[in-house]
Length: 112
Image (cartoon, rainbow, N blue to C red; front, top):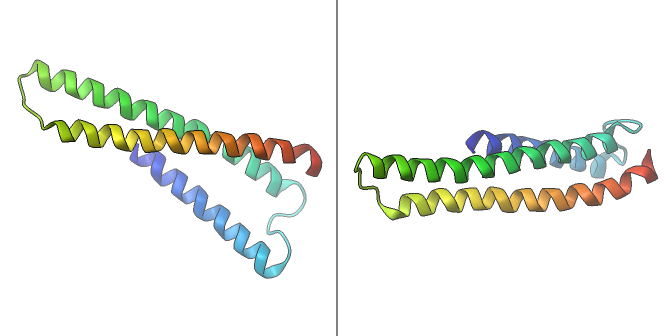
């Protein structure tokens, strides 16, 4: 889950840098269709990574709870709630990115 967050954050920073360059200079940093294709495929890859991270987070939380219960270890309920909350945020990020991906797919035929 942490790696998914780091990759998503790095991709977002890259997109912000490209947008700032485009606003300041008035031209795109990546010429031709490369920028549109980067947005399209980057959104697709990032949405799959976010979905994978969310599923892994929910799965690990369930497995850890079962393992701790099997060994008789008492773990505070807030531990599982925090893990599920972070996985839920990744799931929300996946849904948002999937919607963004659909929107960018509508713009793709107009620019390519």
